[in-house]
Length: 302
Image (tube, rainbow, N blue to C red; front, top):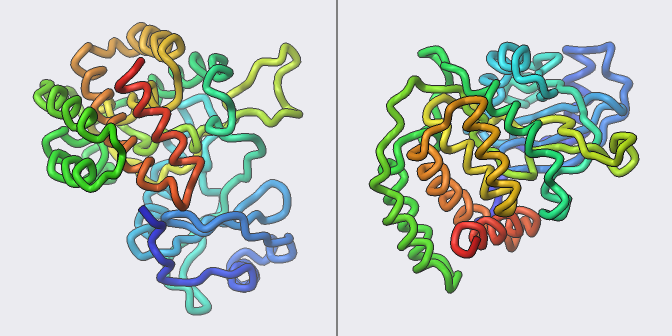
């Protein structure tokens, strides 16, 4: 699955012009392009800030959601998150709101071998237990996260039918086994919405703790922030870990949040949904493809 084309091209010069007009105290910082993601272009501003610039209209409202809601969420989750420090508005031909966020140094969990991720189990469980609190009625709506599994059934079957993966029939059989799992009946909880290992930042090799253990430095990319069934976030148990660490994460969350067995079954189904999307991204994004392949193995073989 290819990254959608940009509807607006964002350049370092454009970022400088917007800063000069709206945040002149930041205008002399070096501006360096970092990435063009699915929704946003990212630029570092000096060493400790970055500009998050929507590159598609569909992403523009997601940045506004982050600006409104992340400050409140950050107060309780106990892990740094990219709370917007400055808000940008349209200008110089750029049509949408944008943000200046903190820049976090480190490596993504996706860059760490699966067998070396155990240190992150406890911190991640604590983060999820604090994040998954009841959300207000006007929380952002996301039609593809936190919803009942049956609302994703048609798209899931389309992906598996179109997949060249020889294990697609096994995934379909597992999906059909999990689809009847009872739905979430609790309150709509706050969700990250995209909890794969490339959105979890750990300490750099130079910044590991004195005892050699890794810390969870930040949780990134709240563009899919929404509310609903926590199972869609708990899919990270399959996306990020092997059997032993997944069992530890489940035990920790069962203790912290009282997660029931049906929610874990739905989480397994959500991991399957994520795996089909991630595997389809492999030609353009090998790191995401590797997460998808790992997840398939965990779902079918572990």
